[in-house]
Length: 249
Image (cartoon, rainbow, N blue to C red; front, side, top):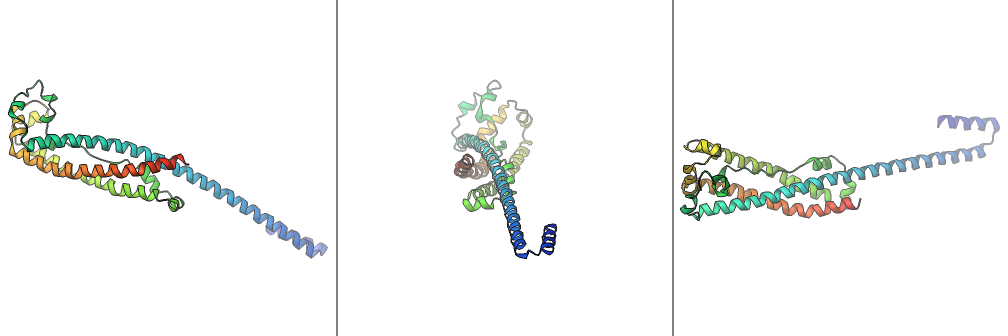
């Protein structure tokens, strides 16, 4: 640019045609400015295209992970419902002695109600790779158009830590119950998954076990299961929006 003006000045001095060369200079400047603006516009367009492609890829990642998370959550809810039935039947005294008298070493492993529900751990967790990528991506333009990034952030912000806390509470309870089992003569057989008649009697007749079931029911059924069901409801609202965004990219 400096060299250009020097050449113009030289020509002006040599020929004295100030007006003509001034027009020429202005025209050249305008062409240069237009070229710069066009280059900037192309660069901005390329950057926007790359940003949109990156954001679309992130949405696909989140969509895939949420599908996996909701499928696992549905399975967990089914397991919780099965647990609820077993727990409530024992708490309500609905298991007849004639039933558990028929349990032997040959059919023990097939008896679903003959296990210790209070030492059962079924953790919940969310995949967060896509969510973390979204948090580290500038979605200001996208957010101005709709609230999808905020909805995703609200979903993960609410349930990632909540699930982690629930898992820790249940883990502590399960470990405490397993520790208490060490005082019983059937402990080793239970730990080794071997049939022991005294353990079966403990499950269906012991007041100690009923108390443990009642506490476990509060931690898992009333808290953890409700949290998972709430997550499923909110995830079902977010997933179609993500799917729609991916298809419209």
